[in-house]
Amino acid sequence: MRKKMTPLVALKRYWQLYLFLLIPLAYIITFKYAPMVGIQLAFKNFEYDKGLFGSPWIGLRHFQRFFGSYIFARVLVNTLRIAILSMIFSMPFPILFALLLNSINAKRYKKIVQTITYIPHFISTVVLVGMLMQLFNPNVGVYGVIYKSLTGTKPADPFAIPEAFFYMYIGSGIWKSFGWGSIVYLAALTNVPPELYEAAEIDGASRLQRMWSIELPAIVPIVVIHLIMNCGSILGVGFQKIYLMQNDLNIRLSEVISTYVYKQGLGNGSRSDYAYSTAVDLFNSVVSLIMIVSVNHISRRVNETSLW
Image (tube, rainbow, N blue to C red; front, side, top):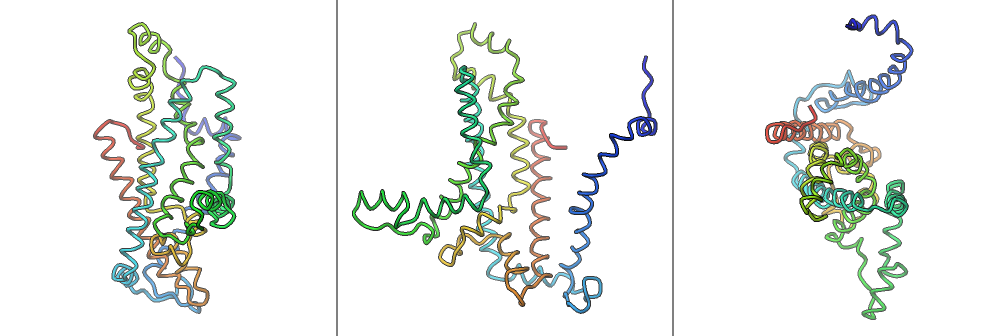
């Protein structure tokens, strides 16, 4: 029987491999843990001349200011609305696409479809928003040209309609990510034993029945984990895309916590309030932590699938 290697012996024998761990460890400490020292800024009245550690403590005053302001309900509702709608409409597409793609037997055609659907993932957010602006331009865009040819009138600018913001944001997100998001589900489907398919064919199961009874249960654990991770970042709606699509006409429905934090902390020039924006962002992080822990606990109790 082989003797179990102690951690110290393993470290001496494979020290070169452990040395590689210093790179990600340094990254995590530098960019994840070290900045947490600045959390105390949320409980201080920051003064430039006194710095982070010399500024006076003011307790929960910044949180009270945020909770008592009119903007609190607006940014919270907008953030939840965008995050929940994105999650509801975005999650089924990669799952359905993976199930359909897995049913294709022609390998060459399957690879072509995969390549085409993966490409949008590599388009930067700036380019994507630029494409949206060109596509929905009421004068020269595809949307404007088709609308004018059918009705004879010039259409309204979708970027000037607050309600249209959700459709463009969610629709472009689905188009950009459904192909790339299906990779993990396709990988899970490759682990399905062929014997299950053979038994289902013998029993006379149709393609749809095999998909429902064999393939879908195989990817349920991945779906649950994906759902837990999405719930953990439900208030962390992507800042860059929303900020680029935002304007004075749709800001009523497009202002979310991340854009509000940026504007308060960095976007107001000389009037930037670092302490207040830190407090708002800390609130965002605490709620996200509570969400991911709660959903993980519920998932572990219901179907024994969880992140930890």
